[in-house]
Every structure is written in structure tokens, then in C-alpha cells.
Image (tube, rainbow, N blue to C red; front, side, top):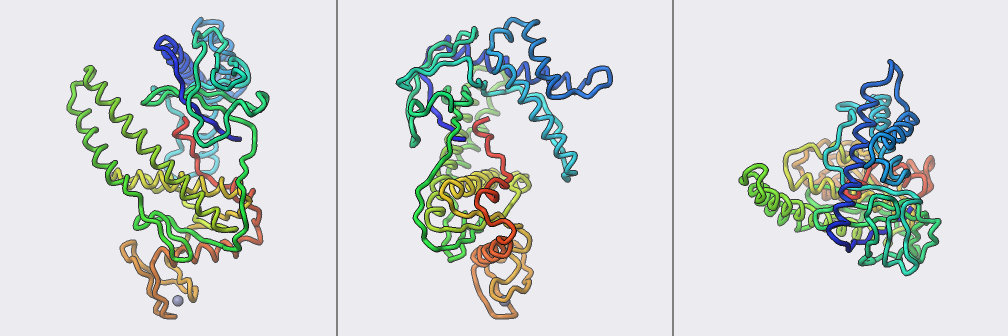
Length: 393
Ligand SMILES: [Zn+2]
């Protein structure tokens, strides 16, 4: 699946209609969740029950009825996705919180499937044809990707309207495979992500953490302070919040850009790439803004590594993160060290190496060892467990 995104131009009345559609989605999702929580006559609620409930809601509320029926069902699917994620976590006995489904108060998107919209042949306008009154919107910008009108319309499986701090966007999910032209380099790389350097590879090349992190941190802190100084419910507070949201959006775009470019450069330089299968989710729990931003960057970066690898036909192997920084890449023996020790010194074979470089070598070696069992790029890339759609959300 490919996702193509455009900014939208329209009139305030149309944005009001989009907001209304998003509110309706939120309403359906919440109502479905409530139904599941309460149960019915002691029965467990299933995905089918939620779908049926959609029709009931449409019969009862006119604002639900005017939304396209597939968009309504998609809203119920969202509720079911939250529920089944919770079930899966319970079944897998994941330590810690299981993610009991929560009510959303700030949904940001509405998703149509194959009906309820019409794209004009020139690919510059889209019209929403349900009775929700969004009407005809203009698409602007074709960033880096093929333009949407070059795809057969049957390949467009989803159309999503997204509200962001700086306006409204449309995303098309197109059933097509991404292909990256790749000329073999004969090189195998292991990479280690870390705090000291953003990424270090097994040849000792490291890419420092991007500078926008520190800059962004200062700016975000200031904007956070401004919001908290304004009176609750006041117009000024709303304005301050809007500025803060824009600043966050800016950071996330910089992060995405950085992650994407770096992953692309790495993939084009090798035929085999190994990385740690870090559950970034587990790392994020800390109170420091800069670190949590960089955690999110790693998740996104590794996501791009896996996906670019698949598109380019490069083998990508995720290896277990255990002991990668402790073991000696020279002799294989364990040399315990705390996080603050930046240099690996082996008392057994005398190897002295940068900590991350040593880890990257271990990761590469581990990937070769495990390659016998999982040597296809497709299967390893699809086993990546990062969920990355928070920004698209
Ligand atoms: Zn050694």
C-alpha cells in the first residue's frame, strides 16, 4: 500500500462540514466502545455486532445517516481495532498495561473507502458525494510522489480526511507496491541506534543526533509555559495552544524527513541490513522531552529502514537486542558495562572500540547467524512490530 498525501483548499463552511464528519466518527467509535463495555444480556460483543450497531445509529440520528455508510463502518472498525488490540495484549500476557480501550475526545480524521467521493480526472479536485455537505475541495502539492491521477481509480482503496494544526489534508491509500531501484553494493551493514549518536553502523560511521532536537525542546518548553499561563477557556489560551500544536507538527515533520532520508541513504549503500528489534514503545517512558522525541525518531527511522529495504529488495533482519552492547565483537566474550561507559575495552582479546560500533558489529553478526531461518527481506520486514501511524492517525 502506498499513501499519497495532499493539502486541501476549501471554504470555511466546508471545513465545518469536515469537522462535523470527524465528530460523527468519534461519536460512532465512542458509542460502539460503550456497547462493548456494557455487553448485551451477558453476551460478548463481536465485530459484527458493532457493524450492525452502525445501522441502528444511522436510523436513530440524522447526522450519522448523512455520513457515507462505509465511512460509518470504518468508524466502528476503529472501535473494534482498539478492542482487538486489547484482547491481543491480554492473550500475549504482555507485561504492564494492556491498553484497555479509551474514549477519544480529539479524533482527527474520517476515512472513506471506495464510495462517497469522486476524484476529477486531472487529479486536482475531489468531491465528497455523501449528504454531509463537504463538497468539492482542491488538492495542492505533490510532494515527491507520483500524482494520484496516474493510478487507476480502482486501486484507490481508502480516502482519509485529516485535520492538522495547519489545515486539512487528504490521504489516498493506493494498492500499489513501492519499488526502489537498487544497484548491488556487496556490502552488509549492522546498525545500532543510540543516544550519543543517532545511528552507528558496523563500519564505524556514525550519524549524530539531529540538532533540531535541542532547538525544538527549548521552543516547545516555552510554548508549553505560555499555554499554562493563559486563563482556561480563554481565547488567548486557544491561540497559544494552536501555536504549540503547530510547533509539534513542525518537529514531527523534521523528524520524519530526517528518518526518511537517512534510511534511504543507508539502504542504497548496502545489500543486507541488520538492526536491533527494539521495542521503542518500552523506551519512551521518560519525562525528558528531548529523549522522547528521539525515541520516536528511532521508531520512525527503523520503520523506514524496513520498508525501504523491502521496496529495494535489500535483506533486512531484525535481531534480538539482548547483549548486543555487552558482548565483544572481537572474541565474543561478555564484557559488562554500564550505559555511561562509551568505549568497549575487552580484557580478553584487547579490543578497544566505540561502544556503538561494537554493538553494530554484534548486530550484524547476529543477523548472519539467524539468517538461515529467516533470510527473506519480505518476511523480516513484515515482522517489524512498530506501529507508525500515529501521525496519520
Ligand atoms: Zn574480546
